[in-house]
Image 1 (cartoon, rainbow, N blue to C red):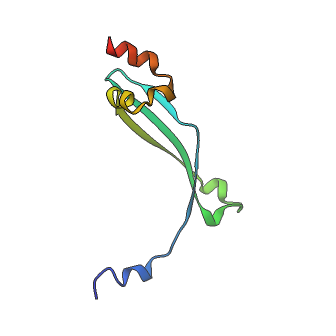
Image 2 (image 1 turned 90 degrees about the vertical axis):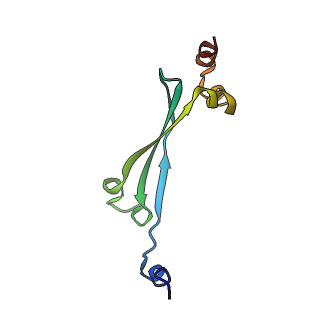
Image 3 (image 1 turned 30 degrees about the horizontal axis):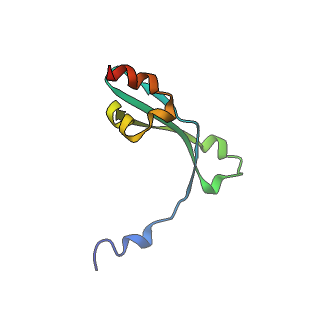
Length: 90
């Protein structure tokens, strides 16, 4: 028996609910763009319970890409970075 066979029996499956907010974009001076994706997380068993709000935790995922990748992937059209991309290419 491998060490992982018995392990799955001892796990308690927990489900979380993630709620995403609106992302923000932050151009920087080092030829990168940073996106921040805010979200909150709560155990799904607490949804509708009195403790739901107090047990909900806020989080932020930050994604960074170079201006070259932003332009190649076409993300500048989504974030209004057209002017920034043009300035950097000059």
